Image (tube, rainbow, N blue to C red; front, side, top):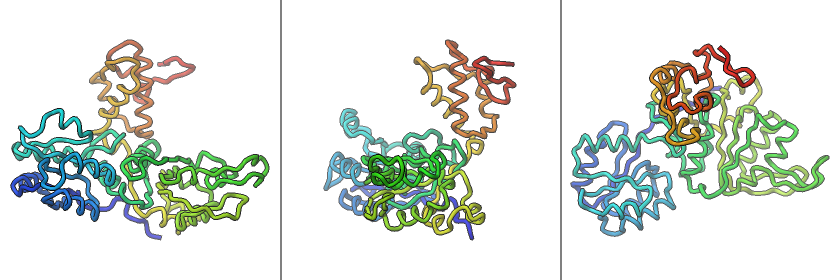
Length: 389
């Protein structure tokens, strides 16, 4: 079998809405790039039509549209297109700070500012991480763009990446940016549940269906009704269950163990794996038809060692998160050097553990030093709760 390409090539999708051709042109000048698709709209209704018929990442919106005011259009877009980032275009004197603060989620861009400043602001917006994620390295950009484009659709997504790289965070971001955001996000780890229990956990069972089934259980799939089901470590799905999972994906229906009743469900599926599924297919451990059904749109997360620009930013985030009191300690230059030179086989999860342990060992000190970090490079280890040289 042939492997599918892991990351598709596509352009940034940007929409500019303003009644002023001069304003639209100033924004277009900031967006000149061979990889960006840019469209224009002169009013709110035209902008909504573009949003309805395309997958847009960013809307640059003039406050002074002729047919809809900014607050009305903002509310419509937030409800119908939550993945679209809105950037308010205005002059330096237009609108008070109070008016801007009344519209949460907006960014402001002064359209009379010099072109380099506008271009930098545009690039910052387009390269922003997903909600809940940290890091803006160049090789995470395809991940962020793919997730935003997929949020509007119910396409099945396969997130591929090494253990600890943040696959569940990507899945949650897609869900939170989608129209399903108010509905459940249900996680099931296919590797963590024994094979004998996994079918019941996924599809549910009726009372008395097997020994110990004292009451009926709807299952994880049904509990995700209207929302998203995240199948983590899908490569560990038992071969015996894969036909039933395939039927659910194709028909959006299931049968609980012990029941002949067919239950129809409205659930979006995102799967994740740290394995190369084509190799498992060749080994006879994974169904080829299920692989192609899951891999409608693949997203691959690079390992942390391939995104060194993000290491210190992630470390700072974890220091703020796990510090018992503000302000969090600072990272010493030697500590920063140690972090950026480490190979991070455990990826972001390993970095999180290192920072959390460092904060514990630093106690009341306000500077994190290399000796606080329990990594192979330090030559130290933790035994029975004590730091050993």
